Length: 188
Image 1 (cartoon, rainbow, N blue to C red):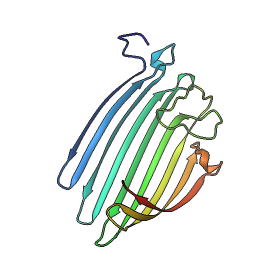
Image 2: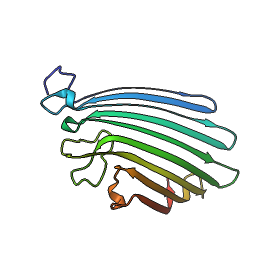
Image 3: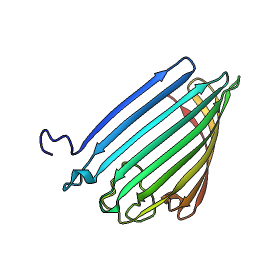
Image 4: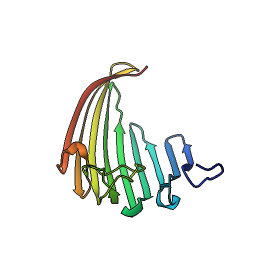
């Protein structure tokens, strides 16, 4: 790095949020200029996101949107759009329930060196030689039983479906995956 050179290995960010009596809204914008040592314009990562939640009596609704672009050198420009909606139901008593849905759409996203996974946003694509486009859709839910203010038992599940060229290494080449979890959590 050269002293005073603000276009290489820098990140610029801004965020704003507001907490109302029964709602929350927030957003951010970010640009990371990581450069590739030859031309700093070849490794720019840009993103912005908007989201919020609204609380009714026993239900909280959440929604969010994320947009990302990146220059990937010889692989070309990448563009992602992600959306999520979810809800939490908290009736009287010790239980609460959550349900959500997320879509991640990646266009011309670099794969890892092995070609088994679509790289996440902001990952270094310099070792990649191939790209793909597709969607990752996930439906998830959970139930919590609160033993106390600090300790809870939980049951969670999710179903992931991959479309077109979106790849996830843990799916071992399959286009869908179902996961279940059960456990106990204590906060310190």
